[in-house]
Amino acid sequence: DIPLLREALADAHPRVRARAAQALGLLDATSSVPDLLKLLRDEDRDVRQEAAASLARITRKDFGQDADAWEGWWRSQDSGP
Image 1 (cartoon, rainbow, N blue to C red):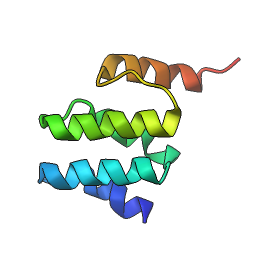
Image 2 (image 1 turned 90 degrees about the vertical axis):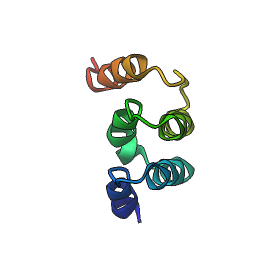
Image 3 (image 1 turned 60 degrees about the horizontal axis):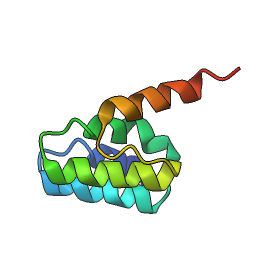
Image 4 (image 1 turned 135 degrees about the vertical axis):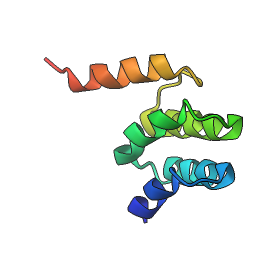
């Protein structure tokens, strides 16, 4: 269930956050992109890696763990013609 996975992204345990990010990527959950973007600034390296991998899977883009690049790209998606 996507809402429960999105909620798990804020869990206190890094392993839970990382697995939730991974699951959202496997589900191709476009609605979770803003939440995954936030995880790119997580203090845990594994969480950041899973968030970046899921973002790449969902969006078919790859900016690695560069939170600024991802956020800039995401903002540009809202500013259509």
